Image (cartoon, rainbow, N blue to C red):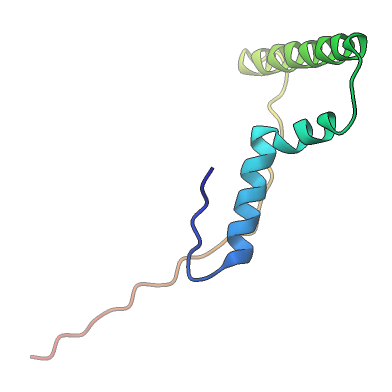
Amino acid sequence: MQVLVRDNNVEQALRALKKKLQREGVFREMKQRRAYEKPSEKRVREKAEAVSRARKMARKKAQREGLLPMPKRKQGPVRQRPAAVAVESEA
């Protein structure tokens, strides 16, 4: 996994790295590996994860088909681009 550091901004690169690790599930796996998990507990956990995934897929499908309302979109801060600087030509 690779994260680029731009303008010596290590904090921003660290945030990007943590976000990538979170998406990949590395933190969850590290937490699970801290202690031994019995095979019966593992089956129960995997079954619960499968049920959760199936429910999520069914919910997404129902939303696409119009049976459920689409989720509200989060409105983040509005960033404005800097205005283009007009260059006057000397004639």
